Length: 188
Image (cartoon, rainbow, N blue to C red; front, side, top):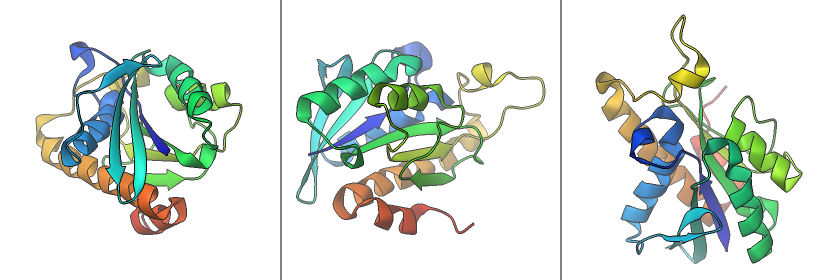
């Protein structure tokens, strides 16, 4: 089994915000794979899908972003998963809008949900898929920016980025992190 943790904040108030792009990727994967209705367990909405021959658990923590590690720790311990069987999907305001970046490990780079997961799992060796949400405009705090809706002019691009991120998750689940990085990371 593999685990994909999509980060976001629960509730309608946060739907469609930049910070919830991880939830959007899980939602799309659930639709594509015709998942059943999510169950509430481990302080998360959990859905199980199959990608190729792999069972994949999709987890959308309902703890709010900064406490997402509680869900990650509980699921990893319950299913006795190795960290390379986990993928965190989250927003990143240090990447241009729509850019994907997969990594096997590294710092949280200011993403507090990812930081909490690394802290709870006692490791920075947690694979992650970051989705660029762009940088805040002059005079707007990062905390306010991530809780904003995307501009209407960007919605088509964001939708295609979420679809590409779902493809990256499928590649990771089926072929591993190296194949996903080689396929979806931009040439630097």
